[in-house]
Length: 351
Image (tube, rainbow, N blue to C red; front, side, top):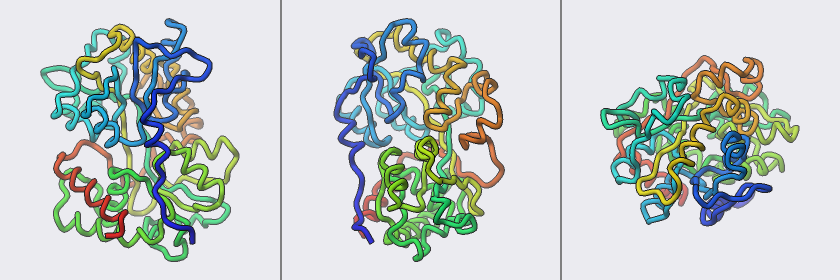
């Protein structure tokens, strides 16, 4: 079995500003985003209007992004997932969006705005733009489909040293809670928390790598080192584009996880406000929906954009709705989330 390690290239990438290849970086707008989301197909109308791409800074996970911003790193926009928004508000990092400057705002599925954390009398604090799943990615050449019918595959000694989990507290806790019978993490009891933590400790010896970037996971799976992972759509999309034999089980008997992400408007941003809205409106353009699906296998929250995609294409990208049990990664109490983060660090350290 290979030595257990934690992948960290994404952390290194987050320390530098990166520009999109073949396009100049616009110094009047800096976007703090996930790897792959700097691709210009996701904001094509911005490029068409300004002739270049924004400057991008890349982060590996939500906690890293938040810590960097609270330490004084200055950008114009950031792209956190929904469970982080309360922390951004509590820290005074963000200010409301002006929806009158977003022609396609009315096309956003209202289900993604159904929280006073996102939208209240003070305005729109969070603009949900994209959603996907965290589920079981597996090498279909070596793993029988019946083996991924249950999340208990992660504890199966047959796959010791051939499993990877995300180095991401939200996703591993979604997995552990589902595996121990919890599909709503907004009301986790101490007993449920302990059961999930114990389950993660049981899985830990089977884990060869905690991945922090979908491209790293895709490399681990393509090499054959990893056969099974708790994965986002991204890595599956990368592997499929390379012709790798990968499956994505979103319907194990215990369930899978859904998450959604979006943009926050940083307070006292250094760049151009007009360009910030141009960038957001490019994201909300109908044509971005297909680009998002093709690039990372995600779906847009914008209903007009979704209507442009054939159901078969959504299914091929694993972005179509499916029946089953799902834990949706909605905002949770920041104290509980901090507890999850701290416990996960202990588990990774072998304690």
